[in-house]
Length: 366
Image 1 (cartoon, helix red, strand yellow):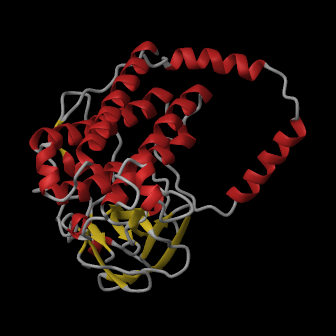
Image 2: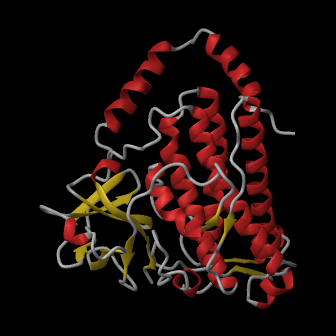
């Protein structure tokens, strides 16, 4: 049984009351972090200053979505279906991910109830996959957004125990993301940092999946206007075609409009003109990248005019092949046998690109 957040808080209180043996080391760590943080891209979130219950309910909203996503797909498709599609052995691992998401829902629901808050309920969702490859492509996108959501919300949590609880879920979401990326043929760790995103940006990307919600359970945070992307295979240094989903919105823009790209802990910018901008070669790395239209060189919520749209940047990877003794140790067979972790086709994620979803359009670098 999982420990409640209140119990974690009690333990955290005991730890914080203990004297530190090396205060000078702790001070140095804080100073290093403070100096490094000065160069990070500012992504002010609408959850800053909000009660912890609001932040945790936002996390629960996303966990409900992810839990429903995996439950629906793994009910629709059997282990035999995955094997037939070329993903032999993947079904039990995806079941483990599904179980994790359900456990996250139960954990956050229990913690919010224990804290005297009302947890949000699950909504009705619509997920635009049509087969197993497109399900896995959408899974990669959702796991990436989930990781970015937790990372972005971390700075809004005031209670240390709550932060620890959220961080323990974040690391699991990141492992889910790594596994799905590899299953789709992409590096499980494409960049040196993951990308934090504000609650408003996350709501913008998640909104297309909400069909209806019980009263009080729809995302309470307002998202940004949707951004459509029509470039089929964007690459760093290439032109990106992006326009607001609301065609009349662009007419209201004044002054210079920028494309802002959130990538890891950095951000890159280029001028948006005639519906396109260049993906910068500086401050943009491989992995799931988020593109915005902004009123200046900032991706803080106050500067965002539309977006984000989602790009998956980075090349396909070569499969890992286990042979001989290595294959034997993993249970692949007798010595001399070989076992291949075979990345799937780029079409897994490509099938998700081109889905004209309100609030999020996905693209893939092949």
